[in-house]
Image (cartoon, rainbow, N blue to C red; front, side, top):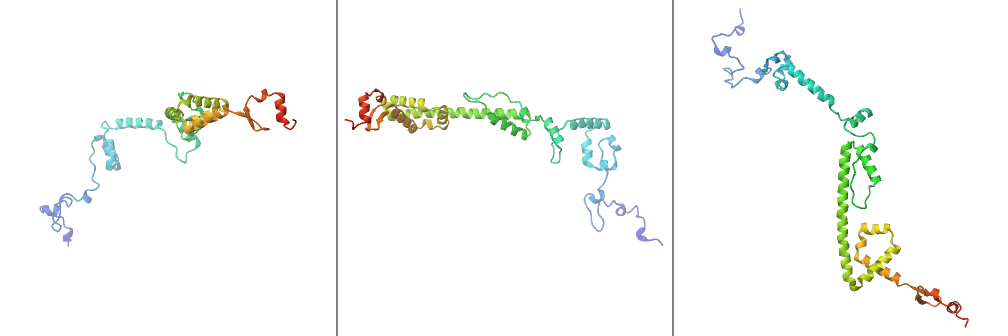
Length: 278
């Protein structure tokens, strides 16, 4: 006796032969659209006939199909693109990781234009402001730092040129400020001293000519202290004091002109040395 549940569906019964993926049942009711679980894994529509030669897994890979669909001519075009990609990859430079050998690191540095030693960098000529020269120690430190950072020759030179130009501009600007301050300081001192300014300036000039040094002049200029009105007036007073210097006779406490001692007579000298001889 046959099992009624295993009987074949009646072809005339539409509900019995309906594809369950396209609708519902008497119990569940109508369902719009197909059941995704029943359509999952359905073959992807291939845009080109040549793709029929792909494996089942490749055909099912939607991202792959989308990527290769631009090759309308098929395998020859795809192979040509692959060969071009291989050529580009062979010319690419890979950044060494922490596990890279010294040889790999050296090859990388050479590929990007880093010289073997910091001394091998070629720097272009730099135009400096007047009276300034290249600081060789600073330049040496710059090149060593550039080499440690794997800067190429072009990068190191560009950075050096920019730095030196920036520093030169700052120095020129600073000199302009000092010059302006110099004029202002002179104006203040002239106002304070009035008619006596010219004479006082002469005392200051003689003082600095006699006791000043290039190093002191540089210090005054760079620090700006040489433009302080009170410092200027102090030097003027010092110059005047030295110019008006009198010789002090220790035996009598008398002040005489600085050159008078050499003009005294023997009697005058004896009187100073032996005051009780009379």
